[in-house]
Picture 1 (cartoon, one colour):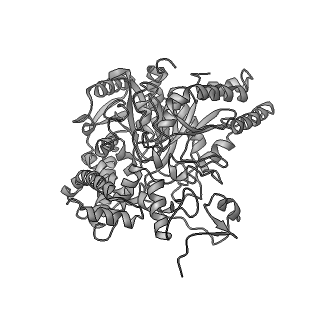
Picture 2 (cartoon, chains in turn red, green; picture 1 turned 120 degrees about the horizontal axis):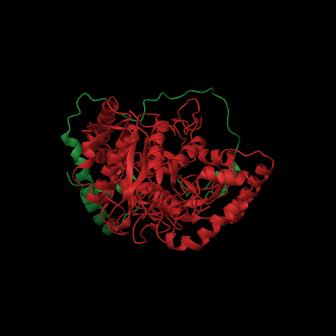
Picture 3 (cartoon, one colour; picture 1 turned 45 degrees about the horizontal axis):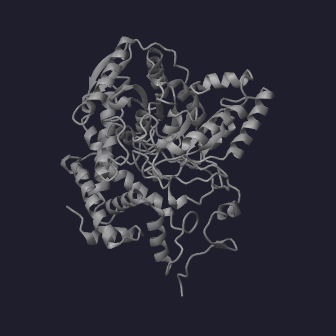
Length: 484
Length: 95
């Protein structure tokens, strides 16, 4: 059960080799035993999970199983789930029991999945290390002194330590892909608009996208089949015919053109990560892919542009946390303005406050053109670079993160160093393109290295095909942390 | 152009986040580091480039002006810090 794929779990449930209650108990027991050290989960609620598991067993007995019936899935604590404490890793929401379900949660519930718990994360998804959570840092199962990446670090650590078979994440600048890379997993950020943002607590709405995290590309395809789909309650949800994202998994890679951007192999890339990625490129060539040198000349501007656009949108989105309708309210105040000031100073952690201040500044009178408008123009240049590149290749491949997992505390005091972790992942968010990370080897300290794939709009099935074929030929994704 | 301490305090006030002088000083240093990173944008000529507000050029959908959601006031107010008679309570604004 520990290493079974979702397909295998589904078969075991269908053949009554295991019940959903047994499977759910198995993972709840592991969480009980190992979460103290990892801090991957903020909330578990065995009664709720087991009630869903019992209902799933009933469906299986009636031969009424859906795509994920009986399979426990952990959810990043950014997705509101009715009756569950939903904190977004913040003191601001530490008392917030959600009164409704996110679209993503509805989709999992109607597919028969069991909510296994809510996973830890950087506060309001602002971070690349899962250290900014009000609930304390998450530890990486591959190296307990190391971060698991972020912001979906709780989901990543949970899967890596086999506390959950699969999980959800969200990705605004790399928050699915970077923790997947640093924790030895597969993670997919879909094309912007594919997965509804309804009930996904907003950080930067033009960039935020939910997606799956799992042990393999095959599992990701199944999870995306559940998560993707039009939702009228999200104004940027894309209306498209449903797809089977697993349909191309078995296709051979002969003739595939992989674009290799030289900008992602230069200064700043650690040698151990570079070596593992080069080996993965060679492996893809062995599988029949052709390597094409491409250029993403404005790629280096993605971090500066992102740190204008994302904080600007965040400063607007997070203005809703004012102590009036939900969440934390300061206990004593002299008037309304004082209540706002104290509530927000107490409720938000240092990184969130910092980003709200950046956003407020770049949107303030007299600075809008110099920062926000400028960043939006650079965003266009970055998207256009991808447009030209996809004329010459089918998928762009490189490193997900410049280094393997770093030590807890190593970058916490230096925001700029922390921001540069996402230098390879941010461009896909700015352009709205799908991106994924899959394990491709190990670097210093036996820590995992991630291979980054970026595809053209709505090419998830093709990307999953590439990843699956790579995973059929390699076993990096099957490795598990020592002692797990 | 580095931010002054007064500017940091002004932004905090615009954002309605209380900030002590000591905090403002440490935030000032961090924000200036971040703005140094952001300044790289200014070297690029973007004349004539159309700003991109969104990951995709989407058209906003329109729908009929009909009620589509049920009344969930009680449910939503159950998580509010202070309510009375269906209203959210805040400190007195008008004397």
